[in-house]
Image 1 (cartoon, rainbow, N blue to C red):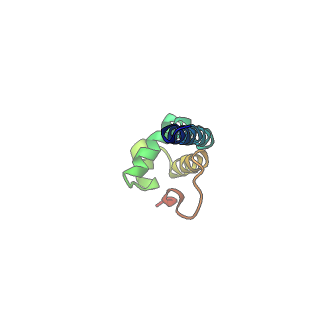
Image 2: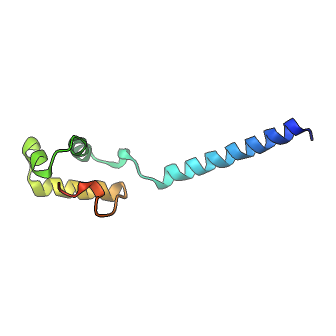
Length: 89
């Protein structure tokens, strides 16, 4: 086996392993596709740095409903910790 063939085999093996890891990660990590239309709307408003109260007023829903959506978004996206989605701002 020549040096070029050896390098090609190494690179090919690396790319195959990398693709396998990428596919595995895609299966393990949830994405935005799992969010409902309402959750995506709330996520957009959170990204605009709006508080739960402001979001509730804008969407004509209660603050508690916004907080429930926030909790669902965190659960679906596997966000945890004290700063997960800035809590209720």
